[in-house]
Length: 149
Image 1 (cartoon, rainbow, N blue to C red):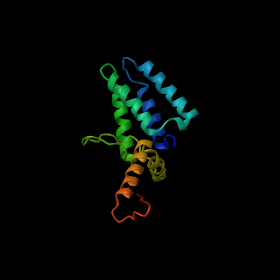
Image 2 (cartoon, helix red, strand yellow; image 1 turned 60 degrees about the vertical axis):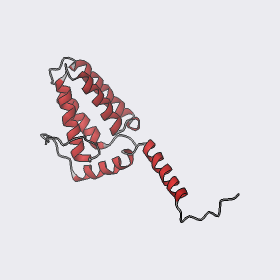
Image 3 (cartoon, one colour; image 1 turned 120 degrees about the horizontal axis):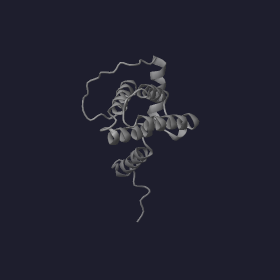
Image 4 (cartoon, one colour; image 1 turned 90 degrees about the vertical axis):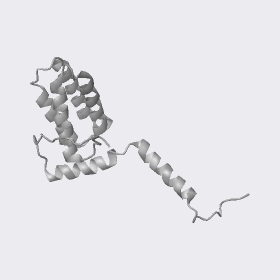
């Protein structure tokens, strides 16, 4: 499953918000953001919401001292994404100061459908299957008819 519609829209909004910033590395960051947007449009299946968020978040943290507006734009992106999709695992409560864009109910439903399959990584799906298999083996009510000495 590729990147969700809501994530794409929010990313577009973030790029537009950031274009007029006065950050030290604005030109370089904008060119990278536009390249990512082009990649997403050409091959949406290679990105997921999580991979885009991870890439943007790590960059914002590392670049924050000289590029605080990039961090602010990303914060707005993340809070709005959390409000719309509810899939981020925020470590603490936050003050919500963003009401920049409201999406329709259809966008919300589509995003829930898209993220319900993409929020669980292959690792966790495999882990869940292994736990279920182990639980089935450990079930005392299960017949031991297949056990032979």
